[in-house]
Length: 314
Image 1: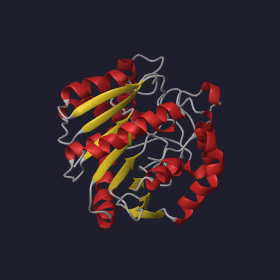
Image 2: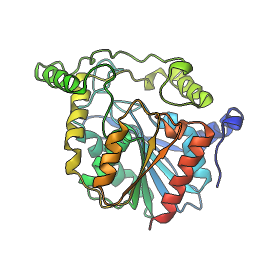
Image 3: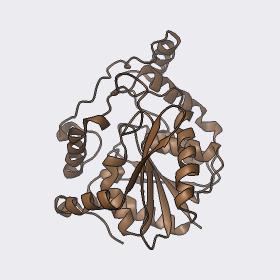
Image 4: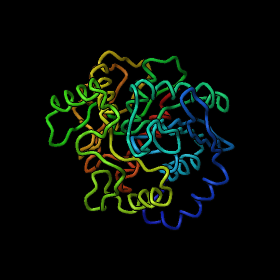
């Protein structure tokens, strides 16, 4: 099994860029509300398709290393930028504002992507790989839509969120009242346009090279930058979190939990694992939120479990 490494990542950028340019098909999928940007690549001897549901502010451009690595391991890869981020359509005049009308809109888009694109190019075994907000979207989609996935692997899924210095009940009330007053398109308190943090202050990953490459990509492509969340997004997320106990998966689910996560609430991951009969959870020590972009020791352990999980599915 091939694993990309921090030590060689700078030198590998030329090969990753060539793969991204020559082997990844990139197009737009038209929806009633706007175009969704997506990409896919299918190696000659592909045995399984991995459909990626990325986290908030993320998209196809950020996942180049992982797509390349999966492809080299003979996995077909499919990924779509969620509405409101990446190169997909933005609903508001200020493209930095994180916004969605209702959280289920994300799952609706994922269903359309699966039926119109994934099924057109792949008819074999499929596994969903979701990170953070994308993990919540994957869970929502698999629970509510007819599908043919063999299983789902969730990296630090957003089944609940931290509200930092604001008590959660107060944050929920503020988001709900703001939406009732028609302020759903305003930034939530403390939120603003995209602003990169220094590596030493970041809460996402302990891998400096992967963090710097992520920030470099967003610096070079300002159109994919995304800032903080609006009251509309926050209210939609809280509604989804409240309703999540009513959702049940019929396929195997693996939850990779990051021990040092301060973006999502890990307790909610444990709670869901106990309620879902098909779920297992493993905590990765010393890991921050972005398990798929972490230091090699952590990232390799996570991806090893992912490959083992895929191999166990039929």
